[in-house]
Amino acid sequence: MTEKFKILNEFIKDMSSETADVETYSFVKDQISKYHLDININSKPIKNKVIAVNTILTFRDKEMHEKKSHFEFTYTTIIQIDETVVRKTDLEKIILCDLQNKIYENMEKCFLSLLHNSGFPEVKFEKKIDFEKLYKDRSN
Image 1 (cartoon, rainbow, N blue to C red):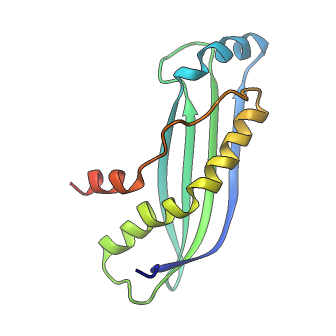
Image 2: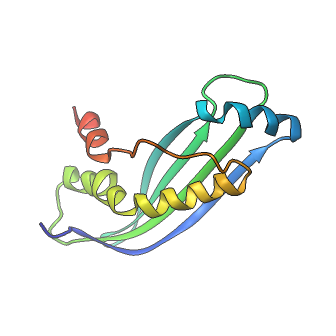
Image 3: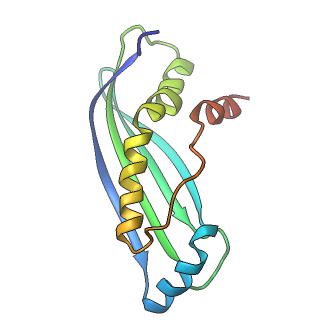
């Protein structure tokens, strides 16, 4: 199957690492294994079949500890959609699934670099995000 889109450009739009102080860093260092990765995807049409897609990764403490760090990363991809794509469901699958599968490895590498350079070199994402499953679950 040929891809129904072409990546024109991709870049880190924004990245943020916030740790208030040394005490917070020490606390988070012991808690970071309990942090969760969240993903949010939004898109904005630019012009004829060209779309900017923002994939936002957030790594944070789900518990409400007073001392916590916050990490957020926005990866923007500009894509050209093939002229044959006309159905909204096909476009959604491209943005939410096909594109994400294509860019995720590089995006994850960049985000892990942010976390490692923020003083948390032990952080790894053991489970890969299954965009196909997320898309199907969303559709049901």
